[in-house]
Length: 200
Image 1 (spheres, helix red, strand yellow):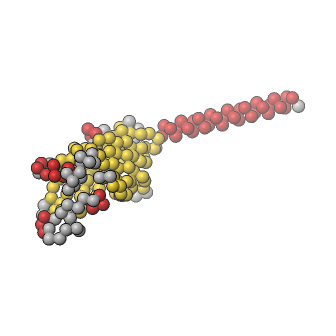
Image 2: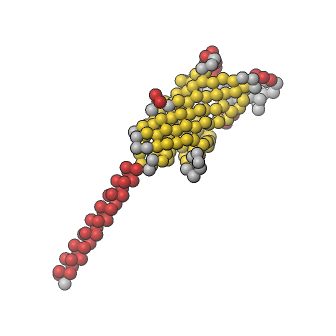
Image 3: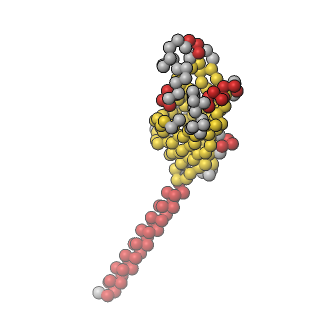
């Protein structure tokens, strides 16, 4: 009887040890497959385009900081901070100051904008990113297709994002609010062409 109890205890200890080893290996594998990458600001760009009834303007704005979440070499999330004082109009530098004032982005009051990914649909040929975009303290959901690639050392992403400025209370020369603007009207949507690189 005593020998049988000793044998059972040994078997139980062996089973417990195997179980612990299994969970340790599983946890380690999971931890290794999930990683956070940091946006490389020197290799990431945001170019914007805004159109008017006649013509339009373009420029740049910088990413202040950001991270990208990756699991099994697949992008799963991320968050980004945009440096609003870096906003520039590259085809008409005289307009840069106007874009930064209260008519548009009110940069002094709102020095950053943010985007936080809430979901990525990888079932499409081009993954669909959904997230919360905050401009001038106003947060709205937005979705757009993106080209994504990830490996053990680097993430690369490219996307063209359409933003409705009226969602963020930017009404200056919008024909949706003001009549008789003629060819001075500015379209309600502007476009962000994003190229992003993140590394471990």
